[in-house]
Amino acid sequence: MSTYQAYQVTGQRNFELVEREVVPPDPGQVRLRVLTCGVCHSDVLAVEGQRPDPAQPVVPGHEIVGIVDAVGEGVHNWAVGDRVGLGFLGGQCNQCEYCRRGDFVNCTDQPLPGTSVDGGYAEMVYARATGLVRVPDGLDASVAAPLLCAGVTVFNALRATRAPYGSLIGVQGLGGLGHLGVQYAKKFGYRVVAIARGAEKADLAATLGADHYIDSGAQDPGAALTALGGAAAVVATAASGASMSPLIAGLRPRGQLVVVGAAPDPIEVNTADLIFGGRSILGSLTGSAIDNEDNLAFSIANGIAPMNELMPFADAPKAYDRMMSGQARFRVVLEIATAP
Image 1 (cartoon, one colour):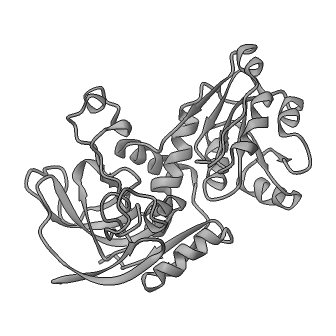
Image 2: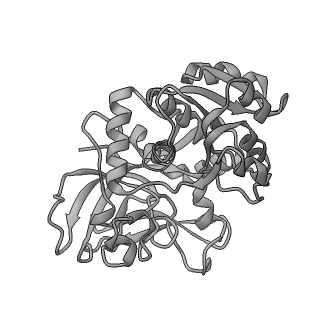
């Protein structure tokens, strides 16, 4: 192949199918032939022009599974033919203060695939070797793709809690993140309560492994959590600060509200709820490449998988619209190529 196809975007939702030249990867990078790419809500950063210069074209997509097609100078641990993944973070620099302290997630010189550099709505993608995730044999590429962002986000959020095994853990929201969060929490050994709006979601929650269901549209979720004995932690996935606010009162002493849903409105907190009982609120941002390998291994061992809608690469703009409609159940994945 001397060229490859990609959907680039400029401005707001201005998709264009273009031909790009296939070039050798830069030092420290690899070139991937993309197999699948998940369509994530964070793609709005590129597609809706929420980046420094939306007039500059960029290829969206960061839930990428592909095959290493070429290896750049200085890359030693990856070889042509390796099946790999790439998530929201595109690889740490290994030079900044945070990298030197081993805090790779907060690297200050890290590309963001699909936002600051070209991503996976394409037949080829170029990536820093430090951002690559080994995708185990036997894990379908369409299953692996959403796990690389949505999956590791809730996986690491649960690992960030101090909750002892067997305690009550809440997962707020039953969407793209929450439907995975319930599965992880159950397999982590917790007693799980799913919190969402609408009585009709109770059956889905139970199917995913929840022991309890709280309809936040019909009752105060904080009071309902307290009636269950209080949650050691709640992972908040719904993109609404107002819906997170009542959850704090339902935490048991030393309980934690772990926020992973990026909301446009603030969380309102009664300071007494934090002081008395030593409750806390913390944020959790995705995970490093090795965190993602832990995540994939745990998912395989415990049968955790996203509920996907598959769409062809040619329909990438429609796939984005489908995701944004809120009607997808629950992750949209582009099928771009088949493994050799």
